[in-house]
Every structure is written in C-alpha cells, then in structure tokens.
Length: 149
Image 1: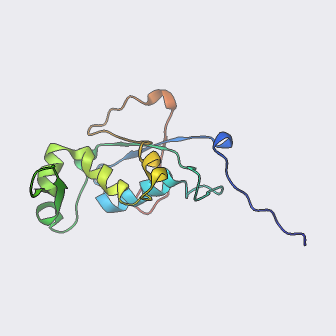
Image 2: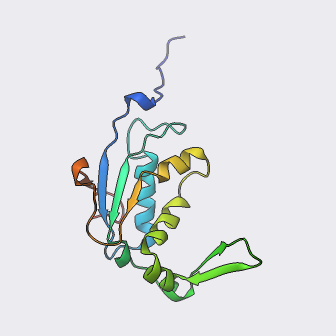
Image 3: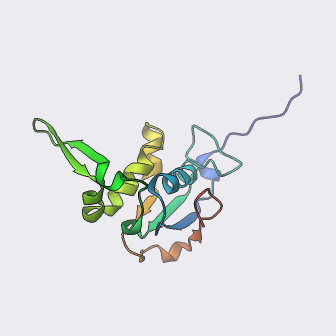
C-alpha cells in the first residue's frame, strides 16, 4: 500500500539559528511561552518531538520585564536549601536580586521535563542589560509571536 513517508528530523542535518529578544516592557509569562516554542523547535516545519529541533535564543533586558496585577508583591518563589524548611522570596525581591532567574524559571517550566528539555534550556542565553557577547552569531530579532514585536 503506497503512502506518504513521514519525516523524522536528524540532529546532524539541522541548522541551528540564533534569535534575539528584547524583554523590555514585556509580560513574563507571555514572552516565556514564545521563547519556549522556539527552544523546542515548534516554529519549524520539521519539528520532531524526540529530537532537539530548537534554536538558540538570546534575551536581553531581563531586568525590565513586567508582571501583571499584584504578582510583583504576591507571587513567591520557593526552593529547598538542604536544611529544614523552605526558603521563599517575593517576585519583586527576586527581580532586584536575580532578574535572569525569573525568565529562566518561567521558560524552564514550559519545556519538557526530561533530558531533552534540559538540553533545550542550555540554548537559552539571558542577560540583565542590553549588551550580550553573541554578536558573532548574527542573531536575528524574533518577531511574530503573540507578544513579540
């Protein structure tokens, strides 16, 4: 029975592109979902779920991202230190202390929870200011998402 052949992407045939996103005045969750789609490779026609078809993403101005509503005061981040109890921190305090960590956590939670998802996360480059050391890769501005300009 003749039929169409399905396509499976291979790691050695994929071209890795570089994208740059300016996070200034962008809402955290909305921009994170667009970034996660590019890291997974779902924006490409040759997307394959079991192969890392995503591309590199550079995010600048992480210190100028926005939260909607009262999340800046009410949202808390918790983590375990090894001692009894959990450490908690409000989103506003973390934004002042580690602005890149807010974006990394938002994108990480939208990626698959397996080895492939951790590999995708290594292709995310975050910077608090407008400068980044990846000019040699000639990143293109990422547009076309729900929230990206």
